[in-house]
Image (cartoon, rainbow, N blue to C red; front, side, top):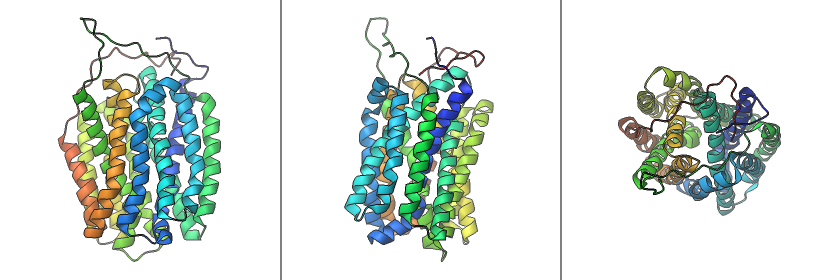
Length: 399
C-alpha cells in the first residue's frame, strides 16, 4: 500500500500526541473535584457510582459500533469531531443541577469518548506500522501527561477556591484550540481494507473466541486503571483529615506514575519480551495498590498510587497494540475498547457498592487489585506473523 501525506512522520506524531493529550486532560479536568460534585449533589457513594455509570453506558454503546464508524468515515474525521465535542461538553458537568442530569451529560461524554478512543488509537497504530518502531506507549504517555496536567490544574483551582464552572469553561476553550491546531496534521483516510479469503474462497473473519478474548482483556485493563483514577481523591479524603487540594494529590501521584511508566514502556518492549513486561507491570500495580490502601500517612498512600500507576501504565497500550495486530482495521481495537467500556460501566458500580459496604480502601483492592493479579496471571494470544513494516527513512504515512 502506498502511503501519502504532506507532513513528516514527526509532525504527524506530534499532532496525534496532541489529541491524546487533550483526551487525557478532558478526563482529569473534573475528576479531582469529584468530592465537590458529590457534596453539591448530596449523594452517597453508591449513588455517585450510579451517576458515573452514565459515562460507561455511553462508551460501551458507541464502542460496539465504533470500528464500523471509524473505518467508514476515517479516523482523522472521527478523531477531530469527537474530540471537539468532548471538550465542549466540559462546562455542562459543572452546572448539572441533579444526579439524573449529570448522568445524562456523562452518557453523551462517554459515547463520544468511546469513539475518540478507537479513532485516535487507529491513527497511532497506522503511524506505528509505518515508522517501524514502537510509539504507542509514548502516545498513551502523552494521554497520561494530559491527565497529570489536568489534575494539577483542577487541584490547584480547588485549593485556590476557583469555581468548577470557571475552571471547566477555561479548560474547554484551551482544549478546543489544541484539537483544531492539530487537525490539519493528522493522517488522511486510507483505502478500505481488502477482505481476506482462505484457500476454499471463504472470507476470513475474526473468530468469536479471539474477539471475546480481546473484550476480556479490555475489561481487566480498565479495572486496573480506572478505579484508582476515579477514586484516588476520595480514598485520600476518607483515610486522612486533609484539604481538598491535598486530597487531589492522590490523583496527581497516580497519573504521574502512569506518565513515567508509559514514557519508558516503548524502551522496555523493545528490550524485553512484551508479554513479560505486560504481566510484570500488572504485578507491580497490585503491589502499589496494596501500599496505597494500607499506608498510615498521606505521603505513603500517594507513593503507593504512584507505584500502581507506574506498574499499570504499559498494560493498556500494549493490549491495544495486540488487538490491532490480531484483527485488521479498527475492529480489533474497537472490541478491546468495548471491553474497556464495559469495565468503565461495571467499575463505578462495584466501587460504589463495595465502598458503602466496607470502605474505599477495601473496595479499591477488591476491584483494581484483583484485576491486576488476574492480568498478571493471564497470557495474551500470540499475534500472527506479518511482513516487516516500511522503514522510517523515506516514509510517508497514510491513514
